[in-house]
Length: 77
Image (cartoon, rainbow, N blue to C red):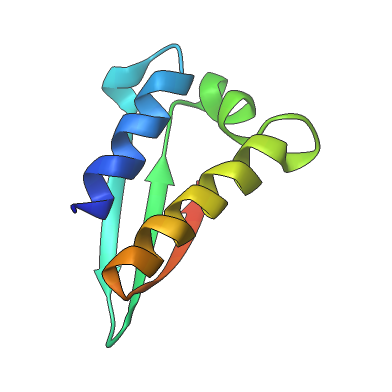
């Protein structure tokens, strides 16, 4: 399972400008850090009210990472 593609697909489904979505991946031993970047006007959509959507994205990614045996961290810029 490609975790970067999973995060990219989730973000593209949420935002109004999917062409501006980018995901950068930084690997460590058993930890993967993803930096999700979206257009300025789409930042609120990805974060959601009180951070609910951001928490949901992080939960899904942690579950997907657990299936691969990796610890996943998602940062939203």
